[in-house]
Length: 167
Image 1: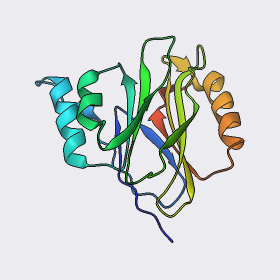
Image 2 (image 1 turned 60 degrees about the horizontal axis):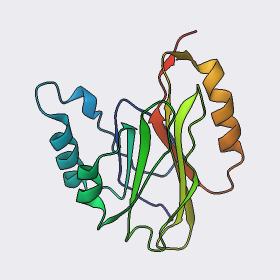
Image 3 (image 1 turned 60 degrees about the vertical axis):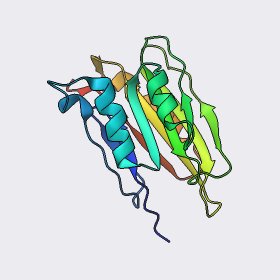
């Protein structure tokens, strides 16, 4: 059975997708040159009606939370560096709620959020949002992320802003 998931990720991105997911990733920061970003982000999220939303380089925003809290389970990461990761999952897409597996920033590496939930059919899915801190060499950041992902026992989707530069 193939699952089609509408996912919205906002910022510059790269994605590791486990094969059968449909993903929509607008890079909002590239589309907001002459307009107010906050209303644009909220309006764009509302129009997309995504099953899963992942906001990277996010700062706590009651406008975003207020707009979506009735329809979505919403969690945000803890941070040391200031920026956070927010992941929101439609309540009808994850009827039993979401479980936060990890929301701790890896100091000097990346902002991080890992949630898990059961789909309507009962199958588990993990969603990881990551923002690698920049400018840094990926050789320092990717080993810990790779190790974390290698220990997952559920299908997963890892999305984010990897800020990878050539070494």
